[in-house]
Image (cartoon, rainbow, N blue to C red):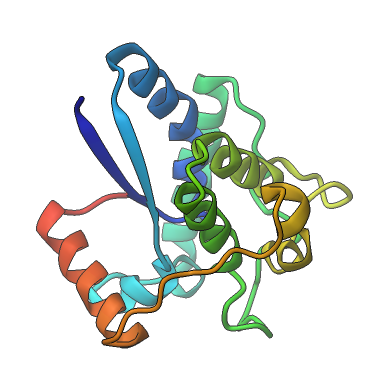
Length: 178
């Protein structure tokens, strides 16, 4: 069986758009998918990128136009400015990590984590401000979503900084992504 690793951010509208196509590829080609969510906000500055919220206004406007174009092309609902997406410095520095930890925990428990991953992306991106989900609100929902309580995550002996460096290096080796 072919193995496919997908590195992505659970705060990315592009990951939301690509989810159904990825699932279709996995189904049609009987691929074993391993999702690798990562902290995009930590990686971008270390790889020479500029976070969207600090880009000049013309670049942000163009980004919004492209999202709207793809939203219409794919026929997928998308709120261009999700109500619960941090506009400035987030109060919780782990705001975008909880969803990724849930996806990793689901995989560690042998579950198909792709539907969960896409549901999390959809909940954040389709929300109209009344129905949107804060990724930080997911912590108490682990038990219900995973069915067995908070998952135990394997700890790296090298610590989180080494894990982040390894993920940055792996991302650079694979080339740029959206």
